[in-house]
Length: 58
Image (cartoon, rainbow, N blue to C red):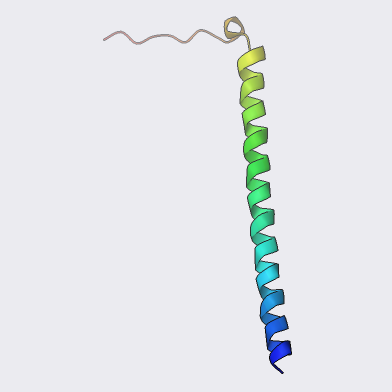
């Protein structure tokens, strides 16, 4: 009986730990992807190819 209760709590704890690790890895991978997108945009987007914005006069 005690072994069954221990096993249930252990399995529930492991499931929760695995979910938390998967979520953390997903967030980490998303941030790494975002960093590469930003670096690529900085490196390869030419500022002269964008349309000039009109400045407001005060």
